[in-house]
Image (cartoon, rainbow, N blue to C red; front, side, top):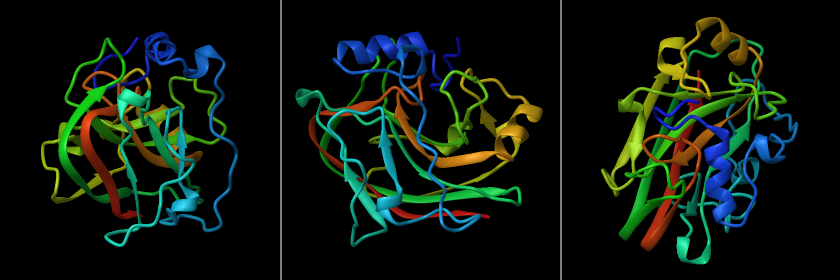
Length: 227
């Protein structure tokens, strides 16, 4: 099972969320995201109602409009059993995209970030990722994460700053569920892309969830483009 940069070793993901009293990913009966087709081809929606939280606790179905960007959400508090894991929007393209560019800001006040999986370790992170249409959460090539350290945000490292990541959609920069780099599998997934978004985890598991033990923090999406 993959550990580097947080790809899903599903039994460990399950353990973390059993401890929280909720369900985990595919190995524990959780299904992948629903088949939602976006209105516009090749365009990542910036409407908060088109973004969905999955596999978290104490988060709404969607983020909310924010005057400083397109949308935002408050990172939940672990004292209330809350955590955030996946946040994604439907995406499809008939022409293979080349680059995804994310601009964001973290507004925080005395935050203490925690990672949910007890086998992971801080600092808490979030990663860009994309997912195939009709992913079953079991196929190791169903989800791919931007894997370069320069494209992974460590919470607390630059809170308060506007940050942009522009990541070419090339196979040497994206790892699958097990952290493997496979050009053929990568391009097959990209040609069948169904979702685009971000996941939250620690230094080993990109999507196993984070929360706050104290303080506050809000992630603001300023812009997201795919070209």
